[in-house]
Image (cartoon, rainbow, N blue to C red):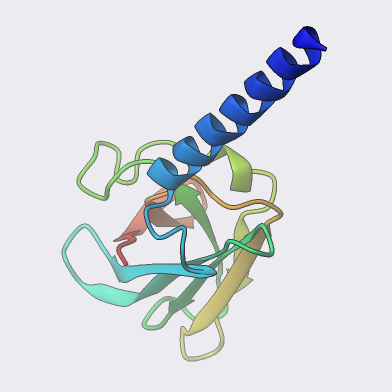
Length: 147
């Protein structure tokens, strides 16, 4: 009986510690959805679109999206969620591991506008802080994601 009580106390303590870690990781945990977004800016400071990430807490899902304009027409682009701010070198730092298998790939229309999205079947952690837009392997724009 004593061993069972000890195990239950340990399980409760572990559960509370896990909840505290998640609360620290996502300060808006009381909300069912946390949306962060930012302007996609080129290194020259020109805004070419928006980046947005929606963390759906209850559904344990994250959706990342980009919407751009003013780019080369009928051209393929890729956008990925990153772990660093746009001021980092290189802009956006490293790719956020959760999204790496499914980056946002899209083509622009004849006017140079386009959009892409990707999802993660988990709630992205607090290190997912930016979205970087690529042309080939070149980083051409970055958006810092803020609430």
